Length: 107
Image (cartoon, rainbow, N blue to C red):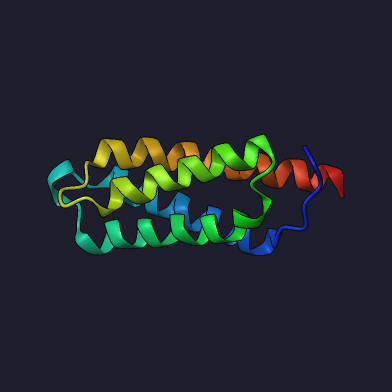
């Protein structure tokens, strides 16, 4: 992976926030998904996309951007599916953690 100058502190913060949101999702029944929670998930995915946008030449970053886009789209639908959000959120969180680990190792 090419060394990038990510704002790792922000990426860590958004990754933690996404973890919290996914945890909230898991704790609710499928029919309890609030529009506010879906909006917060979409917003957090969007923030991650903004942080990574200038680094899209890297394969892992491109895959992470795709995961963020998928999560954002899933959260922005009229009737977001909890299972789909949890799955997409988990994938995105995993990718972001990989980027952070690789960046720290390269530093």
